[in-house]
Length: 89
Image (cartoon, rainbow, N blue to C red; front, side, top):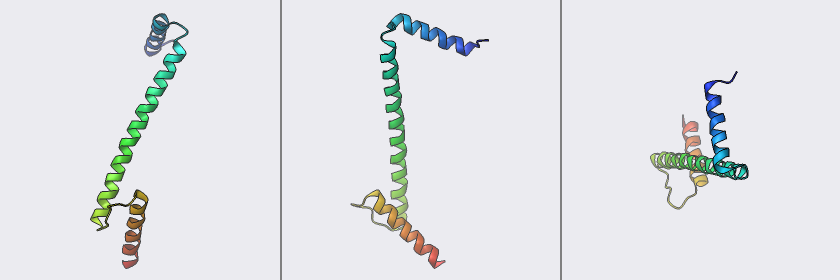
């Protein structure tokens, strides 16, 4: 048996078919897919920026100069400092 949510999806698909016609549906689906991909890409970009900010803040707390260094270089220095502190304890 078809539940309420499934009926809503079916009705929306029928309305889209009537409005856009059968030839435009694949094009519309591609556009929706591209928009979703761009949204996810932007969301991941924000997360990456937040991670970079946290790494830079940690480096500064450890007394590491971050100017002119790549993220990889900063992470390497953090690992070196962390390794030294483990050996010291």
